[in-house]
Image 1 (cartoon, one colour):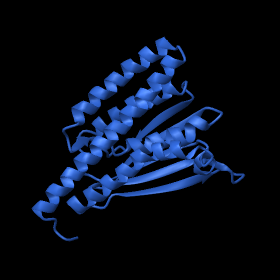
Image 2: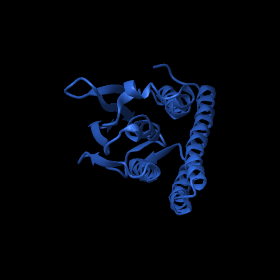
Image 3: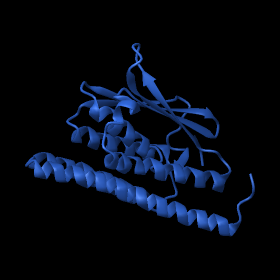
Image 4: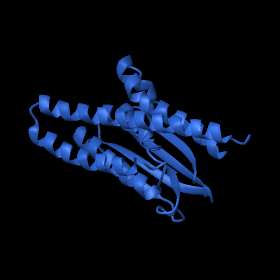
Length: 222
């Protein structure tokens, strides 16, 4: 890979900051929409509880806002807060499980912040929230090489095929976080010479009916 000049590097860093700002706004907008829903439905107690959880999450995001990279533990803390918020928002209709490899040091590896969250968001909103029965979200993190993390996000929701019936505006809004994240990955790859990759697999049951989605992300450790 060609060496990145200082001018190009600075340009890439500015682009990363702009993209990070967009994803923060996207996230906050979605959370405020949930609070508005509770208020309109006259569910004041739930609105207050949600707002308390949301405030904690915003504090975490602000703590990380000046950091280009965060520890895996910091990223996981943010993910747990976000998933708990979404679970509350959708009446606790799904559970989640983290699986961390024994050789993964959650304090040492540094990765770009808010890199995993958009794919978790898609798993919940595109799959689990539309499922009639209780759903499960699993996040599996393993070290495949000394400098490479493998993150697998799997849900047993309705699958992407069934989700196509959702109106176009909603799909575009929910896909924004993933699009921004993919742009960030491209820039990080250029900056550090390490290839980030994402592979999305549709899951099917024994009757060949959609049964969820699996997202595999390879993240170079910074």
